[in-house]
Image (tube, rainbow, N blue to C red):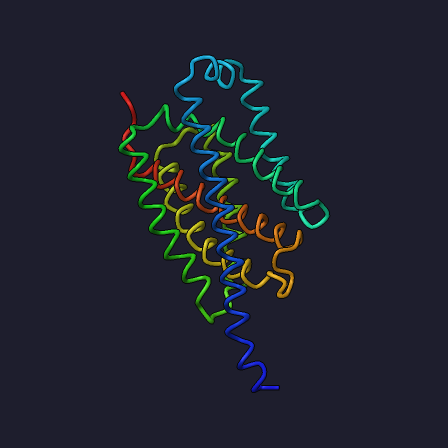
Length: 233
């Protein structure tokens, strides 16, 4: 058995690598959809008025984002592959509508710089999560608790408008989502069901993984931008 497993391991590693490639491609598709939508909204006065001209619409979009990401996360295994892909695309699109605020608030150079920093950090952290032999489960539980505290602090600061607390939140968020990038990568790699390559289940697993890493990347980018970005005058 040991001899057989030894010879099967390169095949398993190759299948896992192909699966993670699909995850990263779906994630890239989601990021492109969000960025392109955000940019197009930022340069279109009618779209700007539609998204930001009415607070009910803006907050409605934020609520819709939560519903979409919650539905996809909770029900992805019960959905068809087409439905999972469609929900992921719609979520990335809706997120792009509200994401346009960053194109309006920050200079193009700041956006590109923050994207480059985020991309480099994400690549290194995700590679660590993929290749490390250390079990990151305990770290994941701690990071989830930290994330809940972070969300609470962000809600409180919405009313306080404390610039020092805002700085602390961004610093902590970068640490939390850096850890989550490594943890989620390891978890996604482990959840892949070997032998179902090319099936609808495989596609749903890839989309679910892409969503998790998409959220890690977006949140890393936002808080790096808030720390390093130059606002438009």
